[in-house]
Amino acid sequence: MDEELEQTAPKGKNDTFHDLTEKVEKAIAVAVVRKGADKEKVFDYLDELDELAETAGAEIIEKTYQELARPNPATAIGTGKVEELKEVLRENDVHLVIFDDDLTPAQTKNLENAWGVKIVDRSGLILDIFAKHARTLEARTQVQLAQLQYMLPRLTRMWTHLSKQYGGIGTNMKGKGETQIETDRRLIKIRIQRLKEDLKEIAGQKEVQRKNRIDLPKFALVGYTNAGKSTLMNAITDAGCYVEDKLFATLDTTIRGITLPSGQKSVISDTVGFIRKLPHHLVASFRSTLSEARDADVILHVVDVSHKLFREHIQVVRDTLDGLGIKDKPTILVFNKIDKFEDREMLNAIKEDYPDCIFISAKKLHNITSLLDLMQEKYDENVKCTNILLPYTDMQKISQIYGLCEIIKRTDGDDGIQLELKINKEKDQIFFHHFEQYITQ
Ligand SMILES: Nc1nc2c(ncn2[C@@H]2O[C@H](COP(=O)(O)OP(=O)(O)OP(=O)(O)O)[C@@H](O)[C@H]2O)c(=O)[nH]1
Ligand SMILES: [Mg+2]
Image (cartoon, rainbow, N blue to C red; front, side):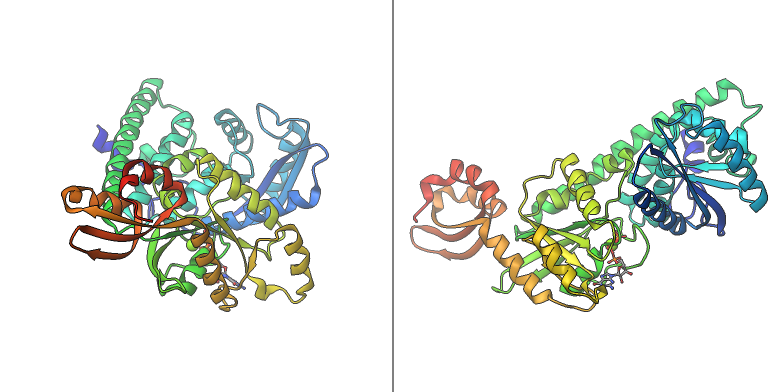
């Protein structure tokens, strides 16, 4: 039975959740906003939804919003708006409505019944894009897990994904017995459990690989989607990371070696971007992908400073990192895409608000050398140098030392092994607890 489900559950790349990718589908975008909200911002948010829709393969032909004290529990928007949009959908022959907010399963169902069209909410759309872009086994497993968790409470509506004979998306589930749905719900729960176990196993293998890697200084690129992380990765290495002017081009982590200005070998990782209101299931399942950021000595927070909402993007990234328990890391705020500014005066004003930032253009390779200098500086600020002499009788401890520190120089002398080390300040305490007796200076 589980096998049957496995065959029909969403598989990622070629079997996406809402199937928007087959052909460009016309859609309207709807947002529900609190009374008195900043109108300009509302349209900026809808523009972002437009980009998401485009990435998923849909074309937004109209954007609309409604101000409400609170969303209508039955239909998110008010009944008058439901009627008004019904007309718009009919007149324009549109069969898809995309909501900027997450809808409850009941709201989705009621709107589908009222309009007779497909309804996709923000989380559903993002999940769809992730499914389309997932390439490695880990990313595909992570997305599949998030999709099934999203699907579970919406099972009646999602029936078509489990039983292909019912065809199109959003088809009404009339005639399907509760018993059948119960069976599916049980099967999905089993599948979720399996995927979680698979992910644990993959994470375990990665952990082994990580442990086997020589402990070089680590830098991690993080940032809002489309900020230019992969472009920057390519600019400072020759990694050949996948760059595209689409949201969520990168879903996996790429790690490459770089040499710092001092000649110090180090590694840099590029990973999945963030976005406002990232579905929580996705954040949870991408925990392991983001573990490189957790392990990093220095984080490079890349920002598209030419974006109107860049300040908000910075906050979203900071909040997401906080939510993942990644905080208080030495961070460089990298303001990218400055080639888009004709008026450099603007940058001076920005610098006043973010005095520690660095302005670059990853695409035009502007200021990359200064960035590398800053990376070196930031790393050095956070490490401490020390020398130890490890007697041959305690030789078994050497791998632990290699795991904790960066070895600058090793001399195998008469009394033991002399090591010149760099220790990250975060690991300082553990190091001194275990190796204090060997310190020579
Ligand atoms: N003008 C300009 N465009 C840039 C610059 N850096 C990146 N871009 C463009 O921005 C778009 C997104 O770049 P990516 O490097 O894929 O961005 P990313 O942050 O890796 O995006 P995700 O993987 O989707 O999170 C591409 O079209 C790049 O060519 C820059 O310095 N200037
Ligand atoms: Mg990328």
